Image (cartoon, rainbow over all chains, first blue to last red; front, side):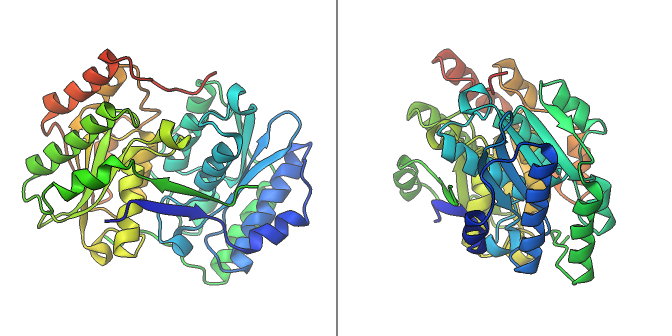
Length: 190
Length: 190
């Protein structure tokens, strides 16, 4: 019986990170970076059109990145946000990305699905910054799941600030590109 | 920067599995098994009081198990259900635990939090069987997150059957035991 599984990033990520900035002062710079992760994930055919990263909220130091790896890892929990959160927690050595873990922010190229919404709640991050809207993802056939209607309010009420529509058009363009290239819109077979 | 992290089970799980059945024909037998996983996780002090497993729905062959590993792995996504799903998908070689992956059932000692609810949607499992209710978890201080009020209906509408209250009393007793032993009720620091 399997007793372990590895969540890892595609090999192209390493060289991409070597050539990229280490600190991203503004939310627009952070968003541009995660949109590029999403775009490269499509270009390299290593997963769905989603990218995410965890930054120190205040100064913008990059802590960890994630891209969708569902197909590559044969693992339905391997969404971009999940990898970014898990890798950030490993990097800082605590399961709490709040004060103890450096007061972090999650930046994601598309608003979180219901699973990632929950993961945000437990991650300790102080804020979430989103690019494309969940309806942009739904429009190309992805399912965002049974999120509460006011999911952003639910995060705010837990002390997690939510910033939406940052470079939304650019983020949504990566979703459209994925669809146009015939990328797999995976959903469980029922 | 971290580019991988390992989701793994505590070492005691291996010997426990060696001494346990491999097939569990009824939902009560499946539930008794996951409650025992939860209890052992408390006894061994390897995580929160939660256990889960994935079975072939029809015949009850055990595919994979999970226990809460948030503290042990310093990883807030390491809930019992998440590990069981990820390890089952590795075992069957596909991210879809539906027909392609053997038509599986997730059995969990406590109803899923919002993150695990989402993970159930994407996992492909055909059914979910729950022991303790989410209010039993809330009663000892755990947060289940912003779940939609009719979360079970949301799963049913996606073709995932939900069975609740299987050995609820026995499952809730493990939660109470954990609280009484002074187990950590981790929540992000806000």
